[in-house]
Image (cartoon, helix red, strand yellow):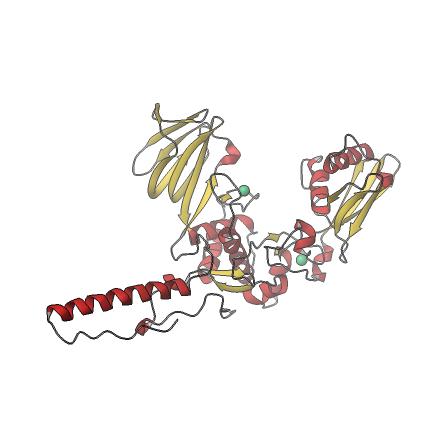
Length: 409
Ligand SMILES: [Zn+2]
Ligand SMILES: [Zn+2]
């Protein structure tokens, strides 16, 4: 799109003013077209400067009632799908202006949000959505999802991954795109003030930076605690077209992160039966584990029925029988011996995207956030902001297309 010619108003006559108005209107149309040309071909909600992130909060507590303190005090209660405020039925959802709100639950749990709130009710529980400033969300999620002592560059890499996940298209919940649990990204307060501050600095240092897929869309970037020696191919773990922008990368120093457990064979066969959707337990002798080059189980095949289940789902099904955190990843082998099954594995998590253990190690060796991300992702850093929403450059020229790669560091 070429720039519109400058408009000159040479005469102050009525006709001249009219002509100038027509010319100005034409200029406005041209400017609007320029803005459209600079915008992406499809909408990427939440990317505008100063955009908010909507998070479904406190669901873990299944709150039936709550007290709100802020610009005013309110008592909220859910009654089926009806919402009561100070004892009176009100139309749901109730929307509350952006302010500092403190939510107190009957069990004494207290959470503070600088956010606009939207409160509804479902099945007798309050459904509270907090719309918070994007970078405030990123800072809190980075703090919640990392260990104290994580080096700054690793926190910065995490912040870019966290921001990308939050801004990637698609909602994971009916009420909001994200929840505040590890299902999406943990967003719970951390007690360690120094760690919270380090996370805030990482968010600030990477402000508006995201990972982008070759299409220009923000990558639904993911992370895990420790890969166990190499990260996984996202399509092989999650199936379908990849939206994470991750790549399989070797990470030899993570091999030391080993775990093992011995389980009753009946328990394993029952868990496998459930994971496969079979009618009952499936004998371990007819099961085949298929692996990627790093030894991660990609899928478990029942050779008798040709039913199969993804390795990550198998690991979670086994772990569920042990109240979680025993079978920590799909990178394992098992050996049946009599009435027990010995499971030995490495790593913690699904193995896709940023390996937090590896990122911290690379940061301690002097790598910056961009170098860390280049190791774990094929997606490339870019800006989270529509160029069209920025202050126009002098002379009104169009900003470069947002798909242009931004400097990496
Ligand atoms: Zn969620
Ligand atoms: Zn690793």
